[in-house]
Amino acid sequence: DQQVKQNSPSLSVQEGRISILNCDYTNSMFDYFLWYKKYPAEGPTFLISISSIKDKNEDGRFTVFLNKSAKHLSLHIVPSQPGDSAVYFCAASVDNYGQNFVFGPGTRLSVLP
Amino acid sequence: EAGVVQSPRYKIIEKKQPVAFWCNPISGHNTLYWYLQNLGQGPELLIRYENEEAVDDSQLPKDRFSAERLKGVDSTLKIQPAELGDSAVYLCASSPGQGASYEQYFGPGTRLTVT
Image (cartoon, rainbow over the protein chains, first blue to last red):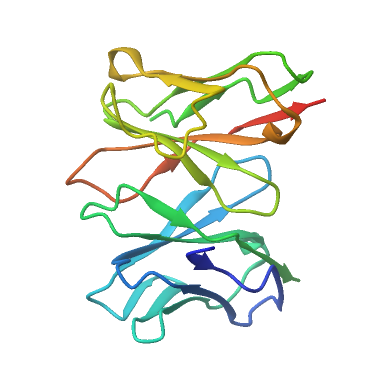
């Protein structure tokens, strides 16, 4: 049973528009969440994180929203750029120091020029 | 600063053969992870080391998989014997350690194909 779900395997967005990637989780003990981006033939790279004590975290074009009651988080990319085309993984942790993360299956984002 | 280094990048072996993967984490990172990533899935933790101690190996199939991190730096993951279902990407990651950053830094992975 997947504890972290990303129900959209793929998403296509026009350059300059907003990309919204969604993530749902089942374990209410998760208290820290990360988003990773992965290009082909490379390892995942950290993008942005959010603690359960917050409902929003922003870093440049990237914003993560957390809705604890719905066990849902989303990543917004505004404006989307062709270089954002990659697979995005949502990850969640219950450890105090976030040492063990559970990853979702990923969403492939394609930003069309 | 050099990132996480993994070798080989690609490996093709026949089933029942042994295989080993090597990882050199970022200098000073105490925590090292080995993940398995199947096609279309996210990384799944196999084992986590704090320095040279394996603190979580609950997901490591110990009948055929083994790992070591001698001297708390480099690590090796071994499969013996390999099975067809072991075909996947094996990722190594490191992080500064408990009480520090949550962020894990991943290597490029080793793509294993078992024929």
